[in-house]
Image (tube, rainbow, N blue to C red):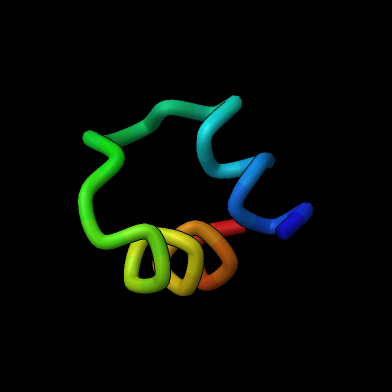
Length: 29
């Protein structure tokens, strides 16, 4: 959950496919 929250806070991209987004954010971070 925390990972997703960080991604949301970043807002680097649209919030589509939360699971996929979370993974992408983790990879980028």
